[in-house]
View 1 (tube, rainbow, N blue to C red):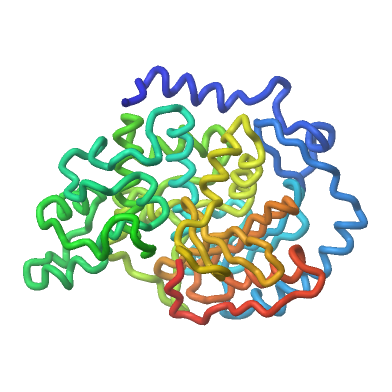
View 2 (cartoon, rainbow, N blue to C red):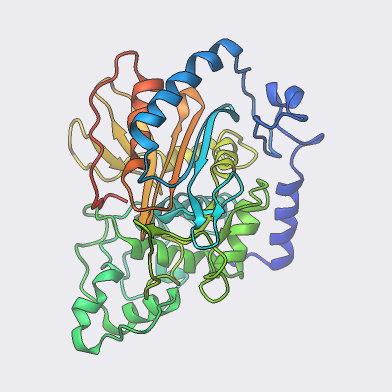
Length: 405
């Protein structure tokens, strides 16, 4: 089942090469040279032109919204809105390191928190596309000692596995828990194997958002590729798309150099969950995330039928008119007019993040914050007001503490 390293890297090389002549076809192919406001990828994507009239209409509205709902003395981070890869609006403020005075700019990679799950899920889908793994394959096919025999890759992706939350392990184990140990993904797996914690519910019977699912998915990615998660993500996604400022955090080497996260004026301290990846620990920029979103419109990068699986809701059950749902690594909200809004938010330490791709209108809205604030989550309201309806409906944006990562 494992891809050979030679075959894997040849596949990556083909992805990185992209179509003949490079760049996106359509309007991008003709207009990309020397245009710093146009983001492109080495895969064919057909988009129409973004007219000056459209640009001039949207930019002041976005600016007004941004300064009213997101930009404030309490916000630090990066914000971008693009259509068809063309930047309609972007802004960067605050410090990646307040002590040294290093400011946030377009190249500053910020911790994505749970927005990382979108990228982990996409890596799994890429492996499915390469016939290396199957969505309904048992986890035990890859991790034979895994104690929950009915759990599948799909139920990890859509949070219907019932696995216990790793953040609850200290409470379960009590005095035997080592609070000083910084956990690895393998440690989480070994704890599940050793203690066989009771499931929250039986596999695929309901939804429970659980970071443990994506820690295990990262281990499956490693098994399937023969690479560590850091290198596998680079070869499957970051390198092929030219996401040059995106990387998986290495707890042992990157702590002093990465963008800091803050609560007020204080740096959030590291804790024993900061070595875990798959559920979090990818750093990126808005411009790189636009590249990722553009790639989802290219069948050369990922097949539409696989994306359809990802954008199908699994969590609402038999509710006739659900408000919220979850696919394979993507959240969704159903609006009163029938629109389905795809998105994912994140929260880890002082990092609050939001990724909102509006598929029907080829819009990407991204806000990455590194100072504890609920301001980035206002991107949902912006999507609702500017791009989905002529008359916006109320959309509640929760105050922190924010549990819906």
